[in-house]
Amino acid sequence: MVTHQQAVERTSTGFWIHLACYIIVVSGLAVLNYQRNPDNLWVLWVAGGWGIGVVSHACAFFTRRGKLIERTEERMNRREKRQEDATI
Image 1 (spheres, rainbow, N blue to C red):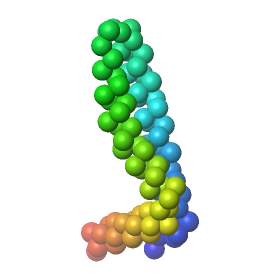
Image 2 (tube, one colour):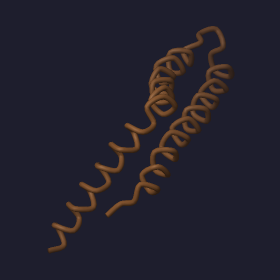
Image 3 (cartoon, rainbow, N blue to C red):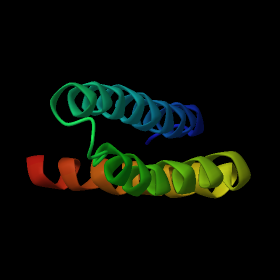
């Protein structure tokens, strides 16, 4: 069985990885956009679209953290059970 602490760590890690990937990728695309085509700021579409996802993830992470942890724990338990059933 998955412990509550494992679910907490996975939920927290998932959010921070999502945020870090967003910052790194959008920064790289901004540099590329500025170097190649500074007159057309297409990177704003990427930053805005993906930013909506990051903001909604952040809202859920900071306001409904208990629910996210509970869902993560249930999902991890189901996955573990499937793996056990597959080895039998």
